[in-house]
Length: 212
Image (tube, rainbow, N blue to C red; front, top):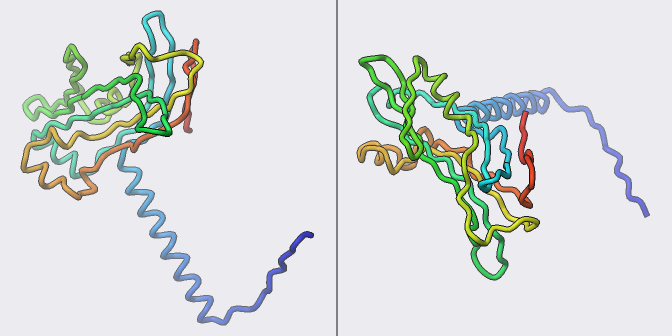
């Protein structure tokens, strides 16, 4: 038996039409504000996992946009630390997920008023690069390439894991006064959120996420 629904059309009076128009405008404004707020954030655009002779590594592209509060803090000499965290875990129904592999890196973004340059440093060798604009520095930091994944002996091929990826501003590395200011402040809560997906380890390059 198939149920069908026939809409009942009635003509709205002028007051109802006005209320509907106002409601539509308000909803549109709220949506645009929410979209604008979300745009000033970190977004994951692309992730790929590679198998190499030494093990596994990953590549990722982010879109990083700093809001005026963070840009002002940079200009005042505050160093902003960004943490990129990739994990492989095995799901267990009877207990917490078990961590199998991980890659974590902290990058420091700073501004030097004397030279009017932005500096980006990170990695185990503390490599430092200088840029004339903030846009250039963010572009380089947003491109993660050939980042090694430190795996345990339990990592196996043809086994399904849960992959997790996130980039965030590390509030714990801020000066104490700024840590207090950052509590409960959306301007300081800069994060891509945790992207999760299921994956079986590849024997060759595999694109996991590719957003236009």
